[in-house]
Image (tube, rainbow, N blue to C red; front, side, top):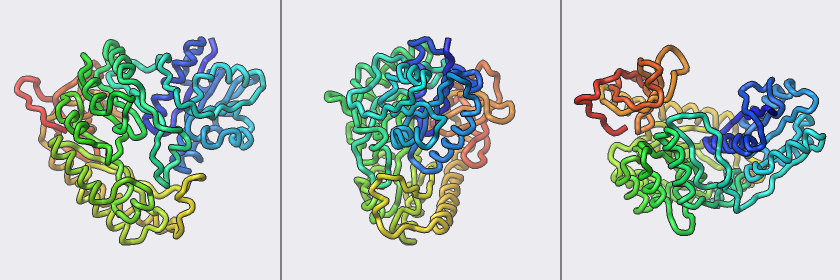
Length: 439
């Protein structure tokens, strides 16, 4: 049987898409391998959000091509493939095929053509494609990603996603519930719903509030997460569904991008600073104890020192639990390239350093306040270092605890005993009398 190796970069959506590709190819007899040297077909599932991600992929392709034997196929799939299309075939002669996110159904045929010497690409957008008839191939685990929405209709000036993922479209709610039910039947207890602006989900009849209630009501599902939402799509019904559905976890990743209303306007975000903080307040009122994390960009064209200081102050005003911080990365084809007054790299780098320091300070203060509290955690697996197990609270806090491997995939009560940075140390507590708190 031909062996397939897929290496995944980028967001959770790409992880889900790799599982989908394994499903497409499994129907044609392909067997998964985790060793590129053993594979007849090697695919690199790519990200295009920042230039650094693309450069990393190009370097990795250079390494993987050493494993190619006559008749083997090296392909690039995903967002970077969609963005560059046939140009990638011209740029990297060792690449045999280029396939965008809507072309995975055709992978068997494209691979067959490539093995016959016909280098090909498929970067056509298909607004109807949800791969409903394809069963993703996932590793058996307590947690799973479920894609509920593909594409994006928003047009943020810095973002390449609408050009790599196409227009927004949502899966039918019954199809999502069926997939989640199948996962629960196989032992999955936690699902993360995925979409580019996931809380704008609407299948023509049902909105995101309906989806949360339906998925949260599936027998066997203990936790429901979702990412990434758009701030102004947290409607009153969605907030009510979060508050009233016990399975929905007390954590939201709420991308802000900037704390400056002036910068947000140039980014074409659909809110200003005041509106964003209003959403934060509404989330905290609806779900007491909720953990809120965010994305922040520094160095967007035209950003002044005053604009940057407003982003710094937003971290404290919103009381974020953590933040992913980035320097602005210009992307070909995005409107931001036409905005005047670019911020030089040295200034952007210095601002990024200052922002990270404040994010860490606020996170450390919040984390210190959790030491001594008890939480229900899902034991996810072995920690990267040492003999401890990695666990996660409902509020998305990572805690390391000593325990047997048999605990992996189960839920335990632990007491947080200390914190260094964003990770906690913890100790198990007896089930009897343990009062787990939100977070």
